[in-house]
Length: 311
Ligand SMILES: [Zn+2]
Ligand SMILES: [Zn+2]
Image (cartoon, rainbow, N blue to C red; front, side, top):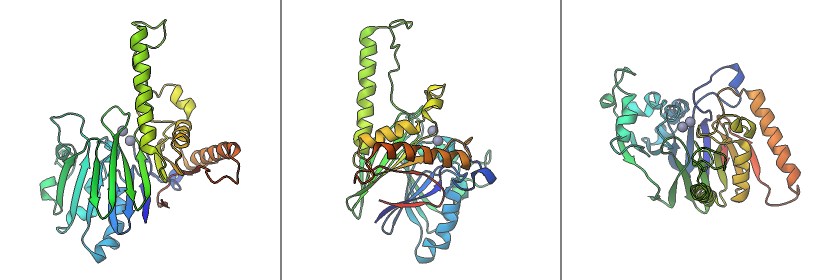
């Protein structure tokens, strides 16, 4: 059985408090299970409650031994690591993998920088756990036991990977932080430095990249997609920030024949009332476009902390 449990659903910064209690205030952290095998995507602040839960459950049966996949190294996706309780147990084995943008950087130096006296009282060298770091590019990993992980570059200001977990014919895909690829050259005849050929090439390149993303999502049972903005917000000054709209996520999921789309990386300014309303609105909207007896109906869910979805 392949499943995902959400420990942190928020983008950018943790937002604890009364207004975010239902969907949660922790930043990005997913627990993926392929039967007994544990994998973690991202080390946002959600990894703190996940670590505590693992100590009370998995650790009672066996040492913690897990693969951690980082989508990228932005702050909200790594800031929870220093409070991950299994770090302080000598039998813990962590394989932390993810992309780095600059060749001279290593994942260990970026992640480890948080565990230096400048930022934190415990240094990386003081941790008991055995940690291995590995740089990831676009690739397919065979983790053994029938678990396959495929990675895909997304569109974000720094290198960022989407992950596709496959196990026993089921698939769960993550696609955040991500915005649609677009033509970065002047594209209108009136624009400064406009060149017709360059504009056409830019359009074609963006279209091709977006098609690759759809292929990566193809027939996924569960797609966890960036939806920081509504389309109106995105168009009104959020282009280039590296995040998608709900509308674009739905469009991508439909094109790729995804079964269950999960809205993720919630804007920190969006409270529970606003997220509930958006979930209802978008469900309403797609229900109107489907025959309710149809088999291929796309299921929509707003990610919330504690929710488990089985592929
Ligand atoms: Zn983020
Ligand atoms: Zn980011």
